[in-house]
Amino acid sequence: MNAKELAEQIMAEAMKAHGPKPKSRIPKPPEPKPEPPKLELVSEAEPVVDLEAARSTNRRSEAKLLVEEKRQIREANQHLLNYRKRHGRMPPNSVEEELRRREEAEQIRRQSIIDYHGEMKLFHEEAERQFRENDPLGLWS
Image (tube, rainbow, N blue to C red; front, side, top):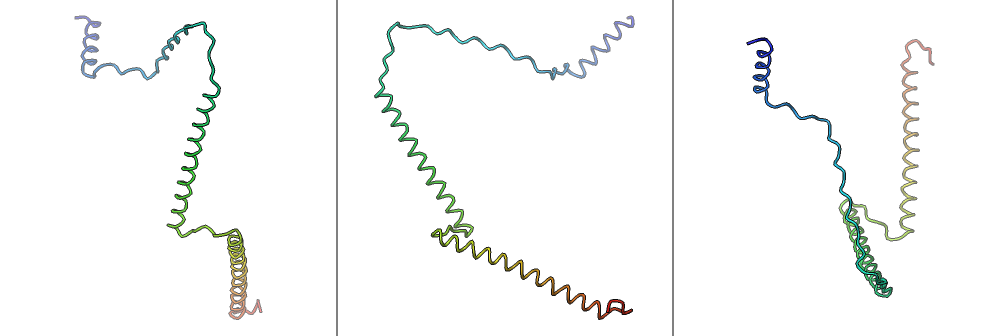
């Protein structure tokens, strides 16, 4: 057995041990789409268009769509109302009540800002007073 045959035999055994060659990861080009069938003219007669029948069909479908849209709006509103009830966020009864509630919230927010800054001013004044009292060298008095 010469070297070439020996190499082929070793390669064949290795291929048998490791299984088949893996498939290529390169995608194949897409197959061309078949052409749509040709349309054939069945008759030479003029088409008959019944406008009133088409309009009535359109009116019926529009009515169905309107009913469905109203139903979806009712469901969405009910879903929102249930969510607000669960989380305690009920909508106001009137516009005036909503405006009053917003104004109260704004006043509370402003007052909390004023209170915070006042407390911080007092805190820092007290800290400075204590610092000046405890100044061992008397440099800050």
